[in-house]
Image (tube, rainbow, N blue to C red; front, side):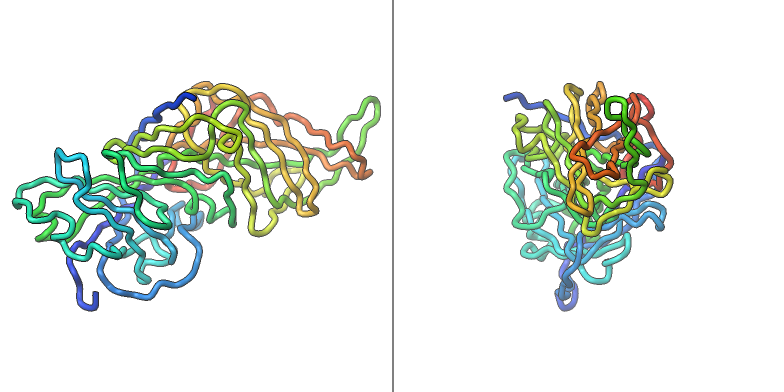
Length: 364
């Protein structure tokens, strides 16, 4: 399945009006990936609107669309130096909202000289960027910078991907290129994992020798995923040079994620039209332990689903995984909330390409 990378071009000239950690390598570029989509960061002084962050539009070839609250963290490093020459938080300009192409405006570093200093024209600069960044740009330690995978995610199924996935980009320019062309291009790659979960109702549950019929339709308001061993959320150190991430030791907080949907989604006993709910996870280099799943229905009741062992090689960065879990809602309103297993293998279903992740395959 093809992977689409977002491309940003940063305009650097004033316009008129202006207990164990482990390292996860950056995902390999997809040789079959589509051509990057263009976007430009400019100095426009435009007024920002309230709105959601980047949203995934499955009707537009699986591409991410920029939204009015998107911001980028951008750094410039003189080649060979370990401290940034400049860093800034960059806001989206209104002309790119709702499209794959966007202009971004730095808040403070508003001239090319601010990014490349008074260096000789042949001096090479490394430019790095990541998103989302919603406050001040963090100061790196060398080329390492702190990013976070939230343990509390929410929104519509379409917006969760853009709200919470962490993406990284790097490019090189000489000082002369920055001054003369005023453009710095980025091709962004996800450094997080994307898990899609589908829930399906069972027709009945067996309690000792009694068969209890179950509801055929319901709604889901939130889901909880808990890891027995590995961190799946929390702080990570992103290497701006390589795109690799180093995770902190697992804690009770970082072994759990809750996804709360802005509007409950419908589920039934067929699973045919059930929405795949996306969850952004921290990647891992190996798989140990299990993931457990539970749902909270629109009526506020909680039901457990069967647990699943981690993939043997962990959750890879820039990769999509899919799983279906089943649960039953007894029609007699008994206190028993039993579940059935969805099967012994993670599997791939036919879904719309989200344009950023490669598939994990059938071997989970």
